[in-house]
Length: 160
Image (cartoon, rainbow, N blue to C red; front, side):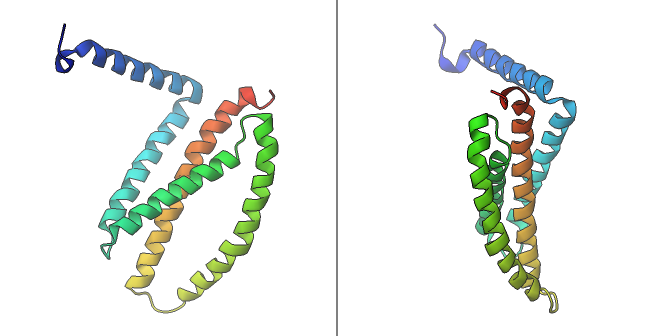
């Protein structure tokens, strides 16, 4: 009997499993997409670093914007990339509701936001622009991560 801290066979099995999963992911997705995922992860990490270092020191708000952007992007990516026929039918209605929301609410708020940029730049505008860029970057990363994986996997399942 070995102690839990001295059992290295379990660690070797775990690493073999991780390596096998990565090799399968590389085989299914292709090296270009995997390189894109790695690049995207680095950009996401950079967004978190920027969120912590931005002035004023409301890092928690910046971090929440990064999380929210990633989650909204992930959700939109799922909605726009159905894998099965039933998802395709159901997601069509969700897409209509999402486009109505975007065209109505978000565009109206965007007009107010753009009017505020007409004056002289100050710290408030710089923080606002920075936060919008953090949200937008993490949104598109979350969207691309989800959409590409589901799109690549849907080749075999959409017709079922």
